Image (cartoon, rainbow, N blue to C red; front, side):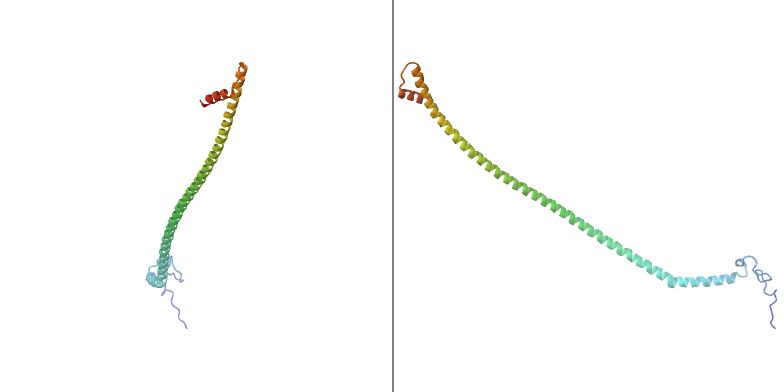
Amino acid sequence: MATEPIAGEFTSACVDSHGSAIGMPQLCAEWIPNQVFWLVITLVVIFFVLSRIALPRIASVLAERQGTITNDIAAAEELKRQAADAEAAYDKALADARAEAQAIGQQTRDEIKAQLDEATREADAQIAEKTAESEAAIAEIRASALANVEIVAKDTAEAIVAVLGGTADQAAISTAVDNRMKG
């Protein structure tokens, strides 16, 4: 036969006669040492799990992250230096291009000026040639006019002498006209 415990033997301040907890069992003073024991064991297990598994993993992730950040900063500084070098090279190329453009412009202006000077010399030569031709033509016309004036003067003098009633001596009229034309 089985012996059953008497209900009064197991009753405590935290349990009623039917074995149910009275109030909140967590606050029962008889159970506090048991709860503290399991709390300490749980905290020790959590501490070992964290210190052996979780914290090393977190530390390695943080170290890897710090390494990545350091590498990225170094790469950014290198890229910044390369960008500064590229900008300096661009500025130098731009300055060289401007200088070359100015040199080409000056060379072109000099060539145009030389061509203009050559064209001016050619035009001056043509003008001098035309002037010489014109002066020769004018001299020829002047000589022709002087010859005609002499003939006209002699004819006019002979006609005037004839109108006045005299006879004109050709030699005397020629001498008088020649003297007058000389000045």
